[in-house]
Length: 207
Image (cartoon, rainbow, N blue to C red; front, side, top):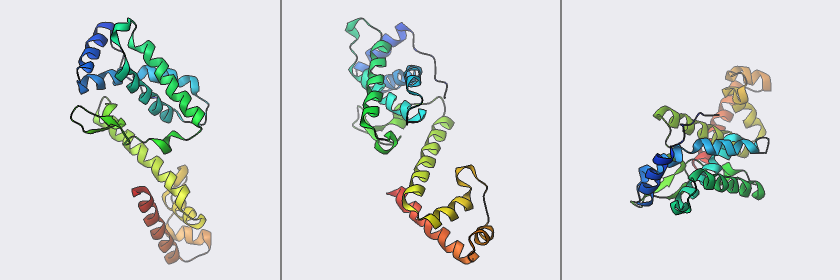
């Protein structure tokens, strides 16, 4: 699991909460990022469910954002105490719903607007330590989308050809000639199947 930055001190937290309450978007982003360890800690309780850790962390982050947006500093408690309950409630709602979260909310799905009225997504809010981390997260989301489209929209023969051609699910990549020999068809036919399948995948992912 990703290592997140250390939590804010009590003084830092008060300062960022004050700025956040005044509409400072950057302060809210810092509060989210510096409380991601809390999200990861709560999520560990739900390992072994039908959901992978990244999905659960994404759901938990929504709960964290809600906590930051609704936390009242005059209550005398730390944000973490309140946020832990919000994170857990969000995960429990997911489990009760019995639906795969990745089908509901992606990294790019709008979760609110900033002070300028611009749409904000999870990628915007969860500012990672560096650009490479964000790019890796986006790439991982694209790979998940690809596999979903592969399973959803391709016929069995198309799955076989594309799976062998590109080594999906960690398997060895094959040439068109190797696939043709395996399936007992011509190389040109393999090429046509591959082309048609890739077009279907592209169309499904764009949709």
